Image (tube, rainbow, N blue to C red; front, top):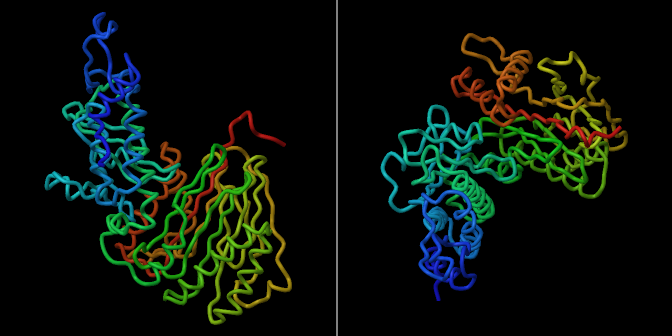
Length: 448
């Protein structure tokens, strides 16, 4: 037996819960006496739409369990029609965050089927700002699709134009959030979703590393970590990891020697070792010695630089170990705190030296609003056609300017890496990875 449609549920729910039930609204005294009922439409706005929202979301969830990736966009659109909208369309960001690419859906027009540029379109503006966008002369609105704090794409809500009621906007945001959650939940086992985000095939080593990477952006109330890496389709030695555990943000950035499958394998093994030690209750020193031993034992011809770090999000204590990697930068109040995180670096990983002599971690106390910028040498050593280096100062200035203009951390890094690619005419000689960790505790939760 097929599941009932949202419009059928309008009638069923009204019969079960009576007047002012979730899918329908009542009008006039006759309605209160059991008279006529009407389906909620986009013109109703506020409370009536919100009353019908819960059952619509529940219907979508039930249908989603057995839905394929090819059915996801249509499923969300059908649910939207149950709220009185004309429909919806889903667009996912490509892996380089250059374009918004449509998920397959029946009825897409030619221009919609091509998608939209993230820079230079209203849809892209919704993605960049993570805010609902609409134009006065268009009968649609664009909603950001966000999983936690990770940007996934945008949802176009048709029949919900400029100046829509708050209730409709809230319903649209809920639909976009549910769409993002469903896309993420199915992307691990539905290649259509993965392929939608790609504009060309990846190399074998890039495929290996992307399988190990976490979401680009993670966050909680008191801290956020965001990362980017290029060349996205041909990464070979760089990788990053970030994760929260018991109020502590863990960040790792590794750079394996070379740019081939062995390099990708070394970085993947390093991330696995980081997670193994972290989930076993180990320290930063334990992580370093475990990665060092793993490389020395199993991939002895590959050396690796790395920074492993932890941020206690309750107190602001930042600890790190640097193994021959560029030192992190501390950004505070719109400037770089000179040499604040610069210490004598330890030997690179792979020699086995740290197995018997684990390094000692460094400590600093952050101030609320501080940001720690970690990067690989492929960023600062990228050269423009005239031979000039991108450099540490240009890296820091670009991030500071973007954040000062009100951009979020993931948007600041997206713009930075696009600037880097443009400078190199979209041909990087080395992997370039950037991780930006922010400590932004609520003022009432800072403890000494």
